Image: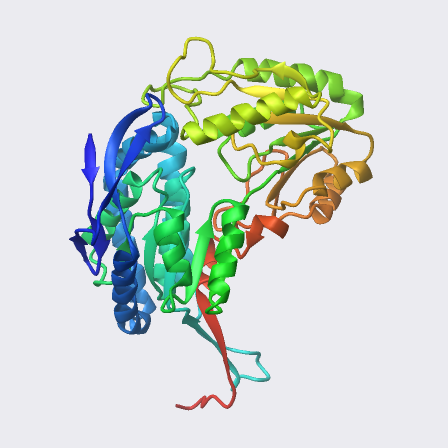
Length: 480
């Protein structure tokens, strides 16, 4: 069993002021795999004070020097990638092969993209050729509280931490108490890279405790949060008391619109995308909308694809999905599967209970519902498990209406070989991201949503800008 009871504050590992033990559960076995400490107000205050004290010097540090430290961080990250993969697999159940590639790889890619974007960023530029003496100056926001979830831990930690670093902000990271081991390892990497004291601080805690303390703290200038919409609303209310800048990346209920002229792999691709990471992705294509003329055929293809999805222990190598993160999530997913059956959706794959051969671990059967209507709970709520809902549509206009009929607006997907139709759909869908015909967004493209999926954008140049204030200056001396 691992014991990680210290916090990283002001460039040193320190003991919590009033330690409270928290057991980290391995979802593959339901056994305790680590014990950490949760912080209290004194720990939050200490971390904020360290970040506040470090900010003036860090903000004044030339961008080239900040970038050089991030480049060193990337070297350390890459050298310890196997440790990171093992930590992620153990704490939140990502199969080890997925942890080594997608989970650890996401962090690596974001660090590289931020380095590339930062090297080309102009922090002081003219408004226009005509008004060259009016300058647009980008300055770091200040002290940032970064609150990250458990489902793609290195993805979200690097999106926030590295963007804040290159922008010139100092920070306090509060990772999810469900997946703290990767964050503690990341703190070791930051320390090894040689960042100045107080630039990066880490305090473990829960949302009610450290999370709330940071979002309401008078010396925190910005909050960047990824998690549930419910928690995002609470954070916004808390932060409003001090008029902080608030960046939210929240839930999703993405539609995958499959037209009759979609390529032959579109349905299977959509199923596999949904089941990836055991369905624990806010941008998962959880509602498959299929043109009626190919609906029955699509259901057969979806069921066949689901049958190929194997479920297994996260510590075993291979192409399978692992458990969901914990008992609370397992019970929630099981309840929603039961609700789908109760409300009349047709089960075409999977169903309630653990897969055959499992009596321990938070394993969920890859599940597909057909004939799901917009009034059903499973059509509306984010399930956050390997559960796909399929519904028919009759026209392009109806497809747009159905896709947009949700409080969320994170990612939608379109499958058609008609380029004009694809582009029309991309413009009509109310979401921060649209992916078409299996083509992902390019490196450094912004990640973020509309409506109750949040605000702000992460990744590349857009992610750096979120940690900057814009100052307009008139009468800049061009000959100085």
